[in-house]
Image (cartoon, rainbow, N blue to C red; front, side, top):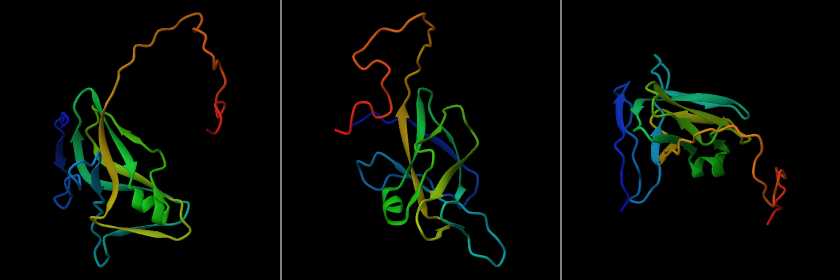
Length: 155
């Protein structure tokens, strides 16, 4: 069993769904779209191939100090439709109190329609190490040195 930090939330729209895990050992809490109501129109938004859309979730969070919220894609949407989070994982800082939004990009070949209440992403609450930044004249040497971007090979 793991320690569970307390995640407080406020519904900004009474139709918003409370994030929840869909299995006992799931790392993520599913986030559901909370789309605005439009007269004589379904509550949905279509994302064209290549487009990025901010999807409102209808909640605000109070993430505990020492943690962050990581917004990640749902694997089924990503593999079946090419719908993913362009800045994955997106970060929700512990001091942010505004509405949660999920940026979605359609990398698929067909438009994808998001409906109100559809689970569009997952939220993982993760500990954050707060680093102390120290400026020095020289860094210690390593075998890798300054070789980056694929320098360690494919295997």
